[in-house]
Image (cartoon, rainbow, N blue to C red; front, side):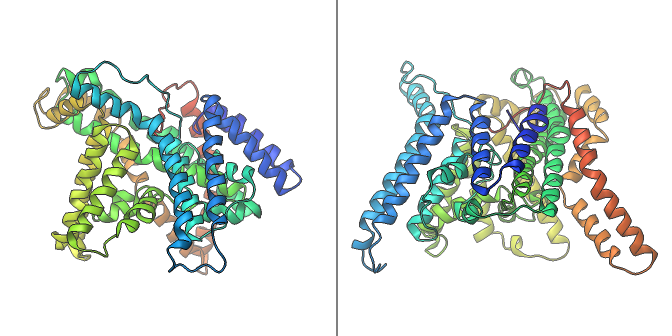
Length: 492
Protein backbone atom coordinates (compact mmCIF):
# COMPACT_ATOMS: atom_id res chain seq x y z
CA UNK A 1 0.00 0.00 0.00
CA UNK A 2 1.31 3.45 -0.93
CA UNK A 3 0.04 6.94 -0.17
CA UNK A 4 -0.89 7.52 -3.80
CA UNK A 5 -3.50 4.77 -4.00
CA UNK A 6 -7.27 4.97 -3.78
CA UNK A 7 -7.24 2.23 -1.13
CA UNK A 8 -5.00 4.30 1.11
CA UNK A 9 -6.68 7.68 0.58
CA UNK A 10 -10.33 6.68 0.72
CA UNK A 11 -10.22 3.62 2.99
CA UNK A 12 -7.12 3.28 5.17
CA UNK A 13 -6.60 6.98 5.92
CA UNK A 14 -10.29 7.71 6.50
CA UNK A 15 -10.69 4.71 8.80
CA UNK A 16 -7.49 5.50 10.71
CA UNK A 17 -8.39 9.12 11.41
CA UNK A 18 -12.01 8.24 12.15
CA UNK A 19 -10.94 5.79 14.87
CA UNK A 20 -8.25 8.23 16.03
CA UNK A 21 -10.80 10.99 16.62
CA UNK A 22 -13.03 8.62 18.60
CA UNK A 23 -10.17 7.55 20.90
CA UNK A 24 -10.73 9.04 24.39
CA UNK A 25 -7.13 9.78 25.41
CA UNK A 26 -3.67 10.40 23.99
CA UNK A 27 -2.60 6.92 25.08
CA UNK A 28 -5.50 5.40 23.14
CA UNK A 29 -4.72 7.60 20.13
CA UNK A 30 -1.09 6.50 20.17
CA UNK A 31 -2.32 2.91 20.23
CA UNK A 32 -4.57 3.58 17.23
CA UNK A 33 -1.68 5.09 15.27
CA UNK A 34 0.64 2.22 16.23
CA UNK A 35 -1.84 -0.49 15.21
CA UNK A 36 -2.63 1.18 11.89
CA UNK A 37 1.09 1.80 11.25
CA UNK A 38 1.95 -1.85 11.78
CA UNK A 39 -0.92 -2.92 9.52
CA UNK A 40 0.24 -0.42 6.89
CA UNK A 41 3.81 -1.71 7.01
CA UNK A 42 2.71 -5.36 7.08
CA UNK A 43 0.70 -4.82 3.89
CA UNK A 44 3.85 -5.32 1.82
CA UNK A 45 5.08 -8.36 3.78
CA UNK A 46 3.86 -9.36 7.26
CA UNK A 47 7.13 -11.08 8.39
CA UNK A 48 9.06 -7.85 7.81
CA UNK A 49 7.16 -6.19 10.68
CA UNK A 50 9.04 -8.52 13.04
CA UNK A 51 12.34 -7.13 11.74
CA UNK A 52 11.18 -3.56 12.36
CA UNK A 53 10.04 -4.49 15.89
CA UNK A 54 13.33 -6.32 16.57
CA UNK A 55 15.52 -3.42 15.46
CA UNK A 56 13.42 -1.03 17.55
CA UNK A 57 13.79 -3.33 20.56
CA UNK A 58 17.58 -3.46 20.09
CA UNK A 59 17.73 0.34 20.16
CA UNK A 60 15.26 0.52 23.06
CA UNK A 61 17.52 -1.71 25.19
CA UNK A 62 20.73 -0.13 23.87
CA UNK A 63 19.62 3.40 24.75
CA UNK A 64 18.73 2.31 28.28
CA UNK A 65 22.10 0.57 28.68
CA UNK A 66 23.85 3.73 27.53
CA UNK A 67 21.87 5.87 29.98
CA UNK A 68 22.46 3.38 32.81
CA UNK A 69 26.23 3.82 32.48
CA UNK A 70 26.01 7.55 33.10
CA UNK A 71 27.69 8.15 36.50
CA UNK A 72 26.66 10.84 38.94
CA UNK A 73 28.27 13.30 38.89
CA UNK A 74 29.26 12.92 35.25
CA UNK A 75 32.54 14.45 34.14
CA UNK A 76 32.89 14.55 30.33
CA UNK A 77 36.64 15.08 30.70
CA UNK A 78 37.07 11.68 32.34
CA UNK A 79 37.43 9.01 29.62
CA UNK A 80 36.45 6.23 32.02
CA UNK A 81 33.01 7.81 32.40
CA UNK A 82 32.43 7.28 28.69
CA UNK A 83 33.99 3.86 28.21
CA UNK A 84 30.96 1.65 28.80
CA UNK A 85 28.65 4.15 27.13
CA UNK A 86 30.75 3.96 23.98
CA UNK A 87 30.72 0.18 24.15
CA UNK A 88 26.92 0.01 24.21
CA UNK A 89 26.67 2.78 21.60
CA UNK A 90 28.87 0.94 19.13
CA UNK A 91 27.21 -2.37 19.91
CA UNK A 92 23.72 -0.99 19.26
CA UNK A 93 24.68 0.98 16.15
CA UNK A 94 26.69 -2.00 14.90
CA UNK A 95 23.72 -4.33 15.25
CA UNK A 96 21.46 -1.88 13.38
CA UNK A 97 23.98 -1.42 10.58
CA UNK A 98 24.56 -5.17 10.50
CA UNK A 99 20.88 -5.77 9.86
CA UNK A 100 20.90 -3.10 7.15
CA UNK A 101 23.98 -4.63 5.48
CA UNK A 102 22.52 -8.15 5.52
CA UNK A 103 19.24 -7.15 3.92
CA UNK A 104 20.38 -4.37 1.62
CA UNK A 105 24.06 -4.81 0.78
CA UNK A 106 24.99 -8.48 1.24
CA UNK A 107 23.76 -9.30 -2.26
CA UNK A 108 25.78 -6.42 -3.73
CA UNK A 109 29.01 -7.55 -2.05
CA UNK A 110 28.28 -11.15 -3.04
CA UNK A 111 27.72 -10.25 -6.70
CA UNK A 112 30.88 -8.14 -6.75
CA UNK A 113 33.00 -11.00 -5.39
CA UNK A 114 31.35 -13.47 -7.77
CA UNK A 115 32.12 -11.28 -10.78
CA UNK A 116 35.74 -10.65 -9.75
CA UNK A 117 36.64 -14.28 -9.02
CA UNK A 118 34.21 -16.01 -11.37
CA UNK A 119 32.41 -17.82 -8.57
CA UNK A 120 28.97 -19.36 -8.46
CA UNK A 121 26.20 -17.66 -6.52
CA UNK A 122 27.43 -17.26 -2.93
CA UNK A 123 24.29 -16.01 -1.21
CA UNK A 124 20.59 -16.46 -1.88
CA UNK A 125 18.51 -13.43 -2.80
CA UNK A 126 16.92 -11.70 0.22
CA UNK A 127 13.80 -9.55 0.04
CA UNK A 128 14.59 -5.93 0.83
CA UNK A 129 12.33 -4.61 3.62
CA UNK A 130 10.69 -1.40 2.39
CA UNK A 131 11.95 1.68 4.18
CA UNK A 132 14.71 -0.13 6.10
CA UNK A 133 17.21 2.66 5.36
CA UNK A 134 14.81 5.29 6.70
CA UNK A 135 13.90 3.63 9.97
CA UNK A 136 17.44 2.35 10.59
CA UNK A 137 18.82 5.89 10.33
CA UNK A 138 16.05 7.18 12.58
CA UNK A 139 16.90 4.64 15.26
CA UNK A 140 20.61 5.36 14.97
CA UNK A 141 19.94 9.08 15.45
CA UNK A 142 17.88 8.23 18.56
CA UNK A 143 20.62 6.12 20.14
CA UNK A 144 23.36 8.64 19.33
CA UNK A 145 21.28 11.51 20.73
CA UNK A 146 20.78 9.55 23.96
CA UNK A 147 24.55 9.02 24.12
CA UNK A 148 25.15 12.73 23.56
CA UNK A 149 22.71 13.64 26.33
CA UNK A 150 20.36 15.46 23.95
CA UNK A 151 17.37 13.35 25.00
CA UNK A 152 16.57 10.84 27.74
CA UNK A 153 15.80 7.28 26.63
CA UNK A 154 12.16 6.50 25.91
CA UNK A 155 10.74 4.49 28.82
CA UNK A 156 7.87 3.00 26.83
CA UNK A 157 8.75 0.54 24.07
CA UNK A 158 5.39 1.07 22.35
CA UNK A 159 6.09 4.79 22.00
CA UNK A 160 9.51 4.15 20.52
CA UNK A 161 7.94 1.64 18.14
CA UNK A 162 5.36 4.25 17.17
CA UNK A 163 8.21 6.67 16.41
CA UNK A 164 9.86 4.02 14.21
CA UNK A 165 6.79 2.57 12.51
CA UNK A 166 4.58 5.67 12.13
CA UNK A 167 3.13 5.19 8.66
CA UNK A 168 3.43 8.90 7.85
CA UNK A 169 7.18 8.60 7.35
CA UNK A 170 8.23 4.97 7.82
CA UNK A 171 8.67 3.86 4.20
CA UNK A 172 9.43 7.09 2.34
CA UNK A 173 10.77 9.57 4.87
CA UNK A 174 11.56 12.20 5.83
CA UNK A 175 14.13 10.93 8.34
CA UNK A 176 12.57 12.27 11.53
CA UNK A 177 14.89 12.69 14.52
CA UNK A 178 13.52 11.47 17.81
CA UNK A 179 14.37 14.72 19.59
CA UNK A 180 12.07 16.58 17.20
CA UNK A 181 8.98 14.53 18.09
CA UNK A 182 9.77 13.22 21.60
CA UNK A 183 7.53 15.76 23.32
CA UNK A 184 4.68 15.15 20.88
CA UNK A 185 4.75 11.41 21.54
CA UNK A 186 3.86 12.23 25.14
CA UNK A 187 1.81 15.39 24.77
CA UNK A 188 0.28 16.85 21.64
CA UNK A 189 -2.86 18.73 20.72
CA UNK A 190 -5.02 18.84 17.62
CA UNK A 191 -6.47 22.09 16.32
CA UNK A 192 -8.88 22.80 13.50
CA UNK A 193 -6.39 25.17 11.88
CA UNK A 194 -3.55 22.64 11.83
CA UNK A 195 -5.85 19.81 10.78
CA UNK A 196 -7.03 21.88 7.82
CA UNK A 197 -3.48 22.90 6.90
CA UNK A 198 -2.46 19.26 7.12
CA UNK A 199 -5.28 18.22 4.79
CA UNK A 200 -4.28 20.93 2.31
CA UNK A 201 -0.63 19.86 2.46
CA UNK A 202 -1.60 16.21 1.96
CA UNK A 203 -3.73 16.96 -1.10
CA UNK A 204 -0.96 19.08 -2.61
CA UNK A 205 1.45 16.17 -2.21
CA UNK A 206 -1.06 13.68 -3.56
CA UNK A 207 -1.64 15.78 -6.68
CA UNK A 208 2.10 16.24 -7.21
CA UNK A 209 2.51 12.47 -7.13
CA UNK A 210 -0.63 11.23 -8.91
CA UNK A 211 -0.98 13.94 -11.56
CA UNK A 212 2.53 15.31 -12.14
CA UNK A 213 5.16 12.79 -11.01
CA UNK A 214 3.41 9.75 -12.50
CA UNK A 215 3.02 11.49 -15.86
CA UNK A 216 6.69 12.50 -15.84
CA UNK A 217 7.57 8.89 -15.01
CA UNK A 218 5.52 7.66 -17.97
CA UNK A 219 7.38 10.03 -20.31
CA UNK A 220 10.79 9.09 -18.93
CA UNK A 221 10.15 5.34 -18.97
CA UNK A 222 8.80 5.37 -22.53
CA UNK A 223 11.72 7.40 -23.92
CA UNK A 224 14.44 5.66 -21.89
CA UNK A 225 13.25 2.06 -22.21
CA UNK A 226 16.10 -0.39 -21.69
CA UNK A 227 15.51 -2.30 -24.94
CA UNK A 228 15.57 0.92 -26.98
CA UNK A 229 18.70 2.23 -25.31
CA UNK A 230 20.47 -1.10 -25.70
CA UNK A 231 19.66 -1.17 -29.41
CA UNK A 232 20.81 2.43 -29.91
CA UNK A 233 17.30 3.33 -31.06
CA UNK A 234 17.01 6.50 -28.96
CA UNK A 235 17.89 9.89 -30.40
CA UNK A 236 19.76 12.58 -28.49
CA UNK A 237 16.59 14.68 -28.30
CA UNK A 238 14.58 11.73 -26.93
CA UNK A 239 17.25 10.97 -24.33
CA UNK A 240 17.44 14.65 -23.37
CA UNK A 241 13.66 14.93 -23.05
CA UNK A 242 13.43 11.63 -21.18
CA UNK A 243 16.09 12.62 -18.65
CA UNK A 244 14.46 16.03 -18.18
CA UNK A 245 11.18 14.27 -17.44
CA UNK A 246 13.02 12.00 -14.98
CA UNK A 247 14.59 15.05 -13.32
CA UNK A 248 11.12 16.49 -12.81
CA UNK A 249 9.71 13.13 -11.69
CA UNK A 250 12.27 12.47 -9.00
CA UNK A 251 11.75 15.85 -7.34
CA UNK A 252 7.97 15.82 -7.65
CA UNK A 253 7.83 12.23 -6.36
CA UNK A 254 10.20 12.66 -3.40
CA UNK A 255 8.81 16.01 -2.34
CA UNK A 256 5.23 14.75 -2.78
CA UNK A 257 5.75 11.98 -0.23
CA UNK A 258 7.32 14.49 2.16
CA UNK A 259 4.35 16.83 1.65
CA UNK A 260 1.93 14.00 2.40
CA UNK A 261 3.89 12.90 5.47
CA UNK A 262 4.08 16.45 6.85
CA UNK A 263 0.38 16.96 6.14
CA UNK A 264 -0.71 13.74 7.84
CA UNK A 265 1.50 14.59 10.81
CA UNK A 266 -0.11 18.01 11.17
CA UNK A 267 -3.55 16.41 11.14
CA UNK A 268 -2.76 14.61 14.41
CA UNK A 269 -0.44 17.14 16.05
CA UNK A 270 3.02 16.03 14.84
CA UNK A 271 5.29 18.70 13.37
CA UNK A 272 7.82 17.21 10.96
CA UNK A 273 10.53 19.45 9.54
CA UNK A 274 10.59 20.44 5.90
CA UNK A 275 12.49 18.05 3.66
CA UNK A 276 12.71 20.02 0.39
CA UNK A 277 13.10 23.72 -0.32
CA UNK A 278 12.78 24.10 -4.10
CA UNK A 279 16.24 22.68 -4.87
CA UNK A 280 16.02 23.37 -8.62
CA UNK A 281 16.30 27.12 -8.02
CA UNK A 282 19.61 26.63 -6.18
CA UNK A 283 22.53 28.73 -7.40
CA UNK A 284 25.30 26.26 -6.56
CA UNK A 285 25.68 22.53 -5.95
CA UNK A 286 26.33 23.33 -2.29
CA UNK A 287 23.07 25.27 -2.15
CA UNK A 288 21.27 22.42 -3.94
CA UNK A 289 22.25 20.00 -1.19
CA UNK A 290 21.03 22.41 1.46
CA UNK A 291 17.62 22.25 -0.22
CA UNK A 292 17.36 18.62 -1.38
CA UNK A 293 16.33 15.80 0.99
CA UNK A 294 17.24 18.00 3.93
CA UNK A 295 16.67 15.29 6.55
CA UNK A 296 19.21 12.97 4.89
CA UNK A 297 21.79 15.73 4.40
CA UNK A 298 21.32 16.75 8.05
CA UNK A 299 21.77 13.16 9.21
CA UNK A 300 25.08 12.71 7.41
CA UNK A 301 26.23 16.16 8.56
CA UNK A 302 25.43 15.57 12.25
CA UNK A 303 26.32 11.89 12.58
CA UNK A 304 29.13 11.34 10.06
CA UNK A 305 30.65 14.58 8.70
CA UNK A 306 31.03 16.51 11.97
CA UNK A 307 32.27 13.47 13.98
CA UNK A 308 34.92 12.95 11.27
CA UNK A 309 36.10 16.51 11.84
CA UNK A 310 33.90 18.47 9.45
CA UNK A 311 35.74 21.42 7.92
CA UNK A 312 37.63 22.33 11.10
CA UNK A 313 40.74 20.53 9.97
CA UNK A 314 43.37 20.62 7.25
CA UNK A 315 42.35 20.90 3.63
CA UNK A 316 43.40 17.33 2.92
CA UNK A 317 41.42 15.96 5.85
CA UNK A 318 38.39 18.05 4.88
CA UNK A 319 38.45 16.64 1.35
CA UNK A 320 38.76 13.13 2.80
CA UNK A 321 35.75 13.76 5.05
CA UNK A 322 33.69 14.96 2.10
CA UNK A 323 34.61 11.92 0.01
CA UNK A 324 33.64 9.52 2.81
CA UNK A 325 30.32 11.26 3.44
CA UNK A 326 29.32 11.41 -0.20
CA UNK A 327 30.36 7.86 -0.98
CA UNK A 328 28.14 6.77 1.91
CA UNK A 329 25.35 9.10 0.75
CA UNK A 330 25.41 7.51 -2.67
CA UNK A 331 25.56 3.98 -1.24
CA UNK A 332 22.59 4.74 1.04
CA UNK A 333 20.44 5.29 -2.02
CA UNK A 334 21.05 1.82 -3.42
CA UNK A 335 23.33 -1.20 -3.48
CA UNK A 336 24.88 -0.52 -6.86
CA UNK A 337 28.05 1.05 -8.19
CA UNK A 338 26.19 3.78 -10.02
CA UNK A 339 24.99 5.25 -6.70
CA UNK A 340 28.54 5.38 -5.34
CA UNK A 341 29.62 7.01 -8.59
CA UNK A 342 26.72 9.47 -8.23
CA UNK A 343 27.84 10.44 -4.72
CA UNK A 344 31.48 10.86 -5.77
CA UNK A 345 30.38 12.87 -8.82
CA UNK A 346 28.76 15.45 -6.57
CA UNK A 347 31.66 15.59 -4.14
CA UNK A 348 33.91 16.73 -7.00
CA UNK A 349 31.76 19.83 -7.53
CA UNK A 350 31.42 20.48 -3.79
CA UNK A 351 35.22 20.47 -3.47
CA UNK A 352 35.63 22.68 -6.53
CA UNK A 353 33.09 25.18 -5.20
CA UNK A 354 34.83 25.26 -1.84
CA UNK A 355 38.41 25.63 -3.03
CA UNK A 356 38.47 26.60 -6.73
CA UNK A 357 35.28 28.24 -8.04
CA UNK A 358 35.32 31.64 -6.36
CA UNK A 359 32.40 32.78 -8.53
CA UNK A 360 30.25 30.10 -6.91
CA UNK A 361 30.22 32.22 -3.75
CA UNK A 362 29.27 35.52 -5.41
CA UNK A 363 25.60 36.46 -5.13
CA UNK A 364 24.74 39.38 -7.33
CA UNK A 365 23.69 40.27 -10.85
CA UNK A 366 23.74 38.08 -13.92
CA UNK A 367 26.35 35.79 -12.39
CA UNK A 368 23.72 34.37 -10.07
CA UNK A 369 21.59 33.33 -13.06
CA UNK A 370 24.61 31.72 -14.71
CA UNK A 371 25.27 29.83 -11.47
CA UNK A 372 21.71 28.55 -11.52
CA UNK A 373 22.14 27.31 -15.08
CA UNK A 374 25.43 25.62 -14.15
CA UNK A 375 23.81 24.00 -11.11
CA UNK A 376 20.87 22.65 -13.13
CA UNK A 377 23.28 21.20 -15.70
CA UNK A 378 25.35 19.47 -13.01
CA UNK A 379 22.27 18.10 -11.26
CA UNK A 380 20.67 17.00 -14.54
CA UNK A 381 23.74 14.97 -15.51
CA UNK A 382 23.88 13.56 -11.97
CA UNK A 383 20.38 12.14 -12.44
CA UNK A 384 21.66 10.23 -15.48
CA UNK A 385 24.10 8.43 -13.17
CA UNK A 386 21.36 7.94 -10.59
CA UNK A 387 18.76 6.41 -12.91
CA UNK A 388 20.71 3.52 -14.45
CA UNK A 389 21.96 0.95 -11.96
CA UNK A 390 23.04 -1.30 -14.85
CA UNK A 391 26.43 0.06 -15.87
CA UNK A 392 26.08 -1.25 -19.44
CA UNK A 393 22.73 0.50 -19.76
CA UNK A 394 24.29 3.66 -18.32
CA UNK A 395 26.88 3.51 -21.09
CA UNK A 396 24.12 3.08 -23.69
CA UNK A 397 22.24 6.09 -22.30
CA UNK A 398 25.37 8.27 -22.41
CA UNK A 399 26.02 7.16 -25.99
CA UNK A 400 22.51 8.16 -27.04
CA UNK A 401 22.79 11.49 -25.23
CA UNK A 402 25.97 12.37 -27.09
CA UNK A 403 24.62 11.52 -30.53
CA UNK A 404 25.76 7.90 -30.96
CA UNK A 405 22.23 6.51 -30.96
CA UNK A 406 19.41 7.16 -33.43
CA UNK A 407 20.62 10.56 -34.58
CA UNK A 408 19.89 13.88 -32.89
CA UNK A 409 16.13 14.31 -33.37
CA UNK A 410 13.58 11.66 -34.28
CA UNK A 411 9.82 11.44 -34.65
CA UNK A 412 9.43 10.04 -31.12
CA UNK A 413 10.97 13.16 -29.59
CA UNK A 414 8.81 15.47 -31.71
CA UNK A 415 5.61 13.57 -30.98
CA UNK A 416 6.28 13.35 -27.25
CA UNK A 417 7.06 17.06 -27.02
CA UNK A 418 3.87 17.99 -28.87
CA UNK A 419 1.75 15.62 -26.76
CA UNK A 420 3.02 17.14 -23.52
CA UNK A 421 3.59 20.72 -24.67
CA UNK A 422 1.17 22.10 -22.02
CA UNK A 423 1.93 19.57 -19.30
CA UNK A 424 5.69 20.07 -19.12
CA UNK A 425 5.56 23.83 -18.29
CA UNK A 426 3.11 23.07 -15.47
CA UNK A 427 5.43 20.38 -14.09
CA UNK A 428 8.37 22.78 -14.31
CA UNK A 429 6.45 25.54 -12.51
CA UNK A 430 5.55 23.04 -9.76
CA UNK A 431 9.28 22.68 -9.07
CA UNK A 432 9.64 26.42 -8.42
CA UNK A 433 8.37 28.67 -5.60
CA UNK A 434 6.10 30.61 -7.95
CA UNK A 435 2.86 29.51 -6.26
CA UNK A 436 4.02 30.43 -2.71
CA UNK A 437 5.31 33.71 -4.13
CA UNK A 438 1.91 34.51 -5.64
CA UNK A 439 0.20 33.50 -2.40
CA UNK A 440 2.48 35.89 -0.51
CA UNK A 441 1.60 38.70 -2.90
CA UNK A 442 -2.11 38.04 -2.43
CA UNK A 443 -1.69 37.94 1.34
CA UNK A 444 0.16 41.25 1.29
CA UNK A 445 -2.52 42.78 -0.93
CA UNK A 446 -5.26 41.48 1.37
CA UNK A 447 -3.91 43.68 4.16
CA UNK A 448 -4.46 46.82 2.08
CA UNK A 449 -7.49 48.95 2.60
CA UNK A 450 -10.11 49.45 -0.05
CA UNK A 451 -11.41 47.32 -2.88
CA UNK A 452 -8.07 45.71 -3.77
CA UNK A 453 -7.69 44.34 -0.26
CA UNK A 454 -11.24 42.98 -0.16
CA UNK A 455 -10.79 41.38 -3.59
CA UNK A 456 -7.46 39.77 -2.64
CA UNK A 457 -8.91 38.46 0.61
CA UNK A 458 -11.86 36.98 -1.27
CA UNK A 459 -9.57 35.29 -3.80
CA UNK A 460 -7.43 33.83 -1.00
CA UNK A 461 -10.41 32.47 0.92
CA UNK A 462 -11.95 30.97 -2.20
CA UNK A 463 -8.67 29.35 -3.24
CA UNK A 464 -8.13 27.95 0.27
CA UNK A 465 -11.59 26.36 0.23
CA UNK A 466 -11.58 25.06 -3.34
CA UNK A 467 -7.97 23.96 -3.83
CA UNK A 468 -7.96 20.85 -1.56
CA UNK A 469 -11.22 19.53 -3.04
CA UNK A 470 -10.04 20.24 -6.58
CA UNK A 471 -6.65 18.61 -6.02
CA UNK A 472 -8.22 15.57 -4.38
CA UNK A 473 -10.64 15.21 -7.30
CA UNK A 474 -7.87 15.53 -9.90
CA UNK A 475 -5.76 12.98 -8.05
CA UNK A 476 -8.64 10.52 -7.83
CA UNK A 477 -9.32 10.89 -11.56
CA UNK A 478 -5.65 10.30 -12.31
CA UNK A 479 -5.57 7.16 -10.14
CA UNK A 480 -8.89 5.61 -11.21
CA UNK A 481 -8.16 2.87 -13.73
CA UNK A 482 -4.48 3.87 -13.94
CA UNK A 483 -2.18 1.03 -12.94
CA UNK A 484 0.93 3.12 -13.67
CA UNK A 485 1.83 4.33 -10.19
CA UNK A 486 5.56 3.68 -9.70
CA UNK A 487 7.05 3.59 -6.19
CA UNK A 488 10.64 4.84 -6.16
CA UNK A 489 11.43 3.79 -2.58
CA UNK A 490 11.71 0.03 -2.92
CA UNK A 491 15.51 0.27 -2.89
CA UNK A 492 15.41 2.18 0.42
